[in-house]
Image (cartoon, rainbow, N blue to C red; front, side, top):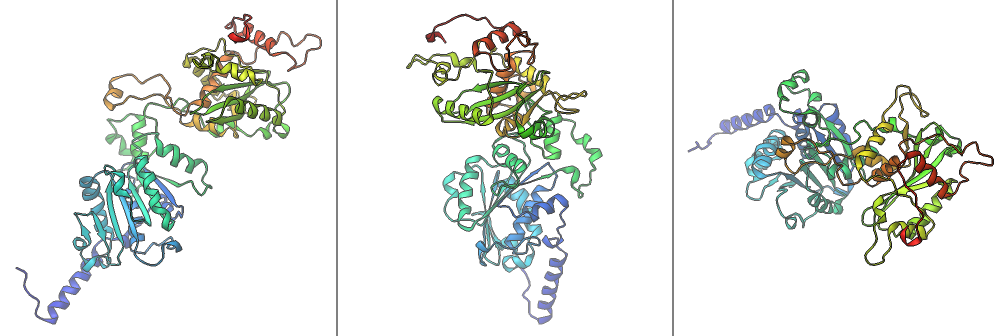
Length: 516
């Protein structure tokens, strides 16, 4: 039983001892972030995404940010006016209670929160293990929820700020952001991207990287183990701890990179190499009349329809210079857009191609997609376009490969480039990946899959139909020297006949309207 304090001297000694422990105890005042962590703390965006490798310091940065706001001691930011001056209501999501809360976050909170902000200077009096709520002396609360809880437990009281330790399920993230609207609240994700290229990459990370000036785009920060100055192990020694990892796993675990576990389709694709501004090459950005114009389409309704326009030079250089990418539009509406776009660009399309599956008849109407487009003046040739994805993929790889000898687009550039205006095509090529197995065991036991992951591949499919149209995209033109010949003057049937003869892959036959 503790001895009762009976003298002023004993009370003074106890107070001095507590003060000494508080001063010696490491807390938020002793937190010194390294450069990337500090950039995260300085960012004032509504949302911030910390993609960190293991031991990169992402959790410390997240907890420090939590403590800065909870104690109203943020050294780099002013408290938002919408938050008022009273206590804050913060929330943190974790994977589970035992590891996420008890083993990871609570020890860090015990370390970083100064005792003067705890109830009676005692962490155990501030922490309610039953409700998983930490209440500070100033009235601010931090409640903890797990990703396994039902959405009904996440409603109710609004929050000033929400933190996510590791990648949240999309439904939980969406529901949580509704709790922030009252106070113009903020959110933080601190995660090692072990899920690879998933929804957080598509909807959060990639928009933050590609369009950082958009207020809706989150701030994005990468914390890698190699940059963490507080690790005892140097980057040169990481190989010792990566013996069980392949290259993708290592990039994810040590560098915090989003990687496609199954492998990217175009790993070398980069906008600086493969994308261009047409104005740099052509006056007014207009395609020269000596270049052939092709259009290609991958049709969808619930999924987007992707129309692309490609120009091919007499030397075989290619630029995809325009796109139409929309879902939930009727064919007649697409036809209007296609014609308007071609009129605005001042181009005459020499040949259209697309998905061979568009020949399939509708059991109700008895017509097919090709016939419906034809009714609106768009004639699409699909004969000879192979169904095998690999054929078009191989051709695309060969044209996308940067060349030491250069191309029309410059030294070190590929033969095929894309205009920056084709934002959806570029977005797909950057993240398109091979299909993956459902389990890690299957992924280890089997060869990597050779098929393309069927998601967000509509512009890619449109482009590969164009690529497979003719193996040689700039063949000798046997008609070029005929009297009266001018580029673009031939009929659609003439162009199809020429292309078929060159590719030696098409067979032409006259058919009635019902068989088109």
